[in-house]
Image (cartoon, one colour):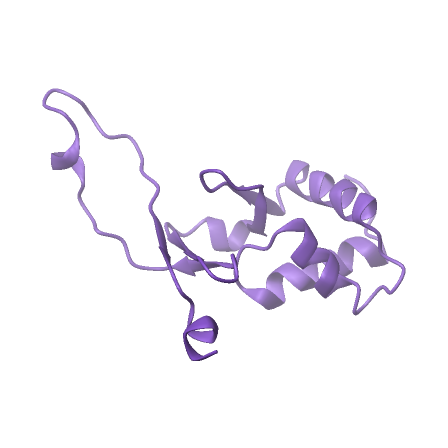
Length: 126
């Protein structure tokens, strides 16, 4: 286990405060408010460490770079919504439920991921 640094703490605070998956650039933008000299290389190094330590989970959307959310958020089954205007990603806490019937006959569904696409509330009003 690596020691906690101001940079790592700022990165964790940024992700926890946002309460949604963040891209490395979003993390840098937010964490820089606490640690002004934070650089992207430091963000990536700390993200790797936090994922390796189990504090963060990687959120992967088709055709997109990795985003990160807290392990506590990832522990609860949820899906994601990506805004087509600003590209931000948000958690969706509803699930369509039993999708076993959608698989081809004779197949067994072991897990699923669902991503909704559209405009977020901020982009709808601007």
